[in-house]
Structures are given as C-alpha cells and as structure tokens.
Length: 458
Image (cartoon, rainbow, N blue to C red; front, side, top):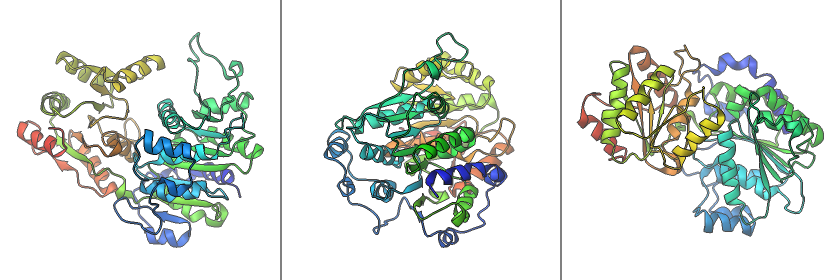
C-alpha cells in the first residue's frame, strides 16, 4: 500500500473519530503504542537519544550547495532532535513515507525543505516537489526558508496561491493562469487542486509530496487533500509522502497506531513527541484573574505593555469583534502603533497590516498570528467553536509558540475572567502537564514586574 493510499484511507475515516479527538483520554500508554507498532519513535526534547542523533548536517550527505547555505549563510550549528531523527528516513533510499510531529520551532520546516532540495534534479525543468500549506502565510514562510536554503542550488520555485478574490474584478481563475513549471511548488490546498484539475500544474514527475500542519489540513481541507493525493497516486504512485505537524490529538495518534496491517506498512515511519513536551521552555506562561472586560484592557495597557520595556512586539488574541474594537481604541488613544486584523478586511488589506507588523512599523498586532514576537496575550482563551467552553488545545499551542521562536525568551499572559475561564485554563494545564504561574493581583505593578523580569522582558 502506498503512502497516498494510507492518507486517503486515514482522512476518509477521520469523521468517525471527530468526537474522540475532542477527548482528553489517555487510554493507552506510550509503551503500549510502541508495542503495537514497531515503527513508532518517541522524540523527547530534553533527553539524550544517542542511538539516533546525528553529529551534524554533514552526516546527511547533503550537497555542498546546501551545506554552504546552512553553515555559512544561515549560521546553523547542528541539527535539532527532530531533524536528526527524520532526515535519514527522508533522504535514504528506498525513500520512506513519514509522519512527523514535533513542537513549533523544533525544525520541521527545515526537514521538509532539505528533503525537497535534496531530491530535486536541477536539470529536469518540471515540478518535482509539491508542498501543501493550509494558509497563505505559512506557504510564504516556507518559500522564504526554501529560497534561503536553496540559494546556491539553482533550483527553481514558485508559489501556487489565489490571485485576487472571487468577488473582485482582479480575480484570475486557474484555467486562465500561466502553467506552473518551477521545480518546487508551494501552495494552498484549494489553488493547487484547481491548478492540477486545469492542467496548469503537472504532477507526473513528482518525487515528493509534503503536507504542512497536517492536523489543520485534515480538519479544514480534508476532501481537497484527498483529491490531490488521489491524483498524485494515479499519475505517480511512487511519490514519497511526508506529513508534518506541531500537534496530533491523542485520539488520532491512537487511531493511526491501531490501524496496523489495514493501513500502515513498514515503509511508513512515525515520529511523535509526548503531549506534555508540547510546550516551549523559553516561554514563561502566566494566568491573570481579572474582574471584567475593562480590567483586561487595563492589564494589557497599564501593566504588561507599560512595565515591559523589553517587549518589542506583541500579539493579542481576541475572540469577539467588540473586544477587538474596544482594545484597539484604548491602545491607539494611549499612543501605541497597533495593527488590527478583522475578518471584514480584504486579503490585500490584511496582508498590508501583517507586513507592517512584521517589518516593525507597528508594535502590536490584535487577533492575527505572526512569528517573531516575544509577547503573546490571550485576551480570550481559544475555544473549539464560538460558544464552546471546550478549549482548543492545538490553537493554544500555536499561539504560545509565537512568543518563543528559535529559542528566544518570551511570555504569554492568559487573561481569565470568571469561573469558566479558570476551568478552561485548568484543562489546558492538565492537557500539557504544565503549571501556569498565576500573577497574584492584576492591579499590582510589582507582581507584573516580577513576572516580566522572570520572562526576560524587563
């Protein structure tokens, strides 16, 4: 059974397990999962794993062009643990299919990009690698990494993203777009699917198919992904499939592990980290109990931002549009440079605001996710649906990881208003087996100074 067969079956049957995916059950231990599947490998972030850790990137037999980019240009020192464990499986013939899950910032993108650049033949002028990302922002980030790592290889690349909006005059349907002929294509699921269907993206020479953030992909673009992999399988059944994600629910992991002979074959390798390791040691997490919505704004404005002189940029996640507008007005009135991304904005308007934030024109971003900051504030905890009281664990992980990319110090403040917020925070702490420090009083300057100092923001 090919890797494409696996993913097709997996996603086709995922609906049966949606309810299970929302549970916190730990019915089986890690040891039991290992016994069920010889190809289960657990990656511990803070333990030595000398039997499988490579000394350096030179052990992967990378090309001189890639080595030059990694060591001289990008200043890499040595592979991370997930890179050391996964790269031999990605690069060693016969090329194995792979499912790899590790925390954000642990090096998964480097794994996929190095695998892509190592497999592409620069002399063949046709698409040979396809990377599917669930968002435009992630596609753009992956392209940036690929361009940096591949700058000395001569390998060509292109983005496959929507052009314009279907409700605007500037929209260009895939059937009218120029064919994509670059050797590496990075794109969003819908546009890739449409370009393949319109014969504007050839997949006959594909050697490697990568899905980034596969957990989000399964939830939002399952049927589109199925069409893509079925078409790839039809035209090129030997294509290597790689699935990368920061999170997989325990229920989904159990499901994958118990399928055994029905789906998994020896060519597939699984790399998972323990649930409690899905957190960043360089990020200090705090919870602050407040009285009401106004108190949240006062904490952000008068305590965290005012006292945190080491805060260079911050993201604030707000659930309700009313809260977004109130917070934006309060911060602007206090003289802060704020970018607020709302769903009512067009893609171009959102992109402009995000770029302004990314390049430092604004200091605070409300509601949207972006990397490169050292402060994240959960004005509201993430929930599965608008009126739900069930925490969205995967969204929480993605949010806090924004404050600790590349091992930098950072802080996350969770603003809790009432018993329900505290119950959700307790579930999050239990889920990841972590203790989130409580700031004793939301009105105390000294308490916030102490928290900010410990986080390296003062």
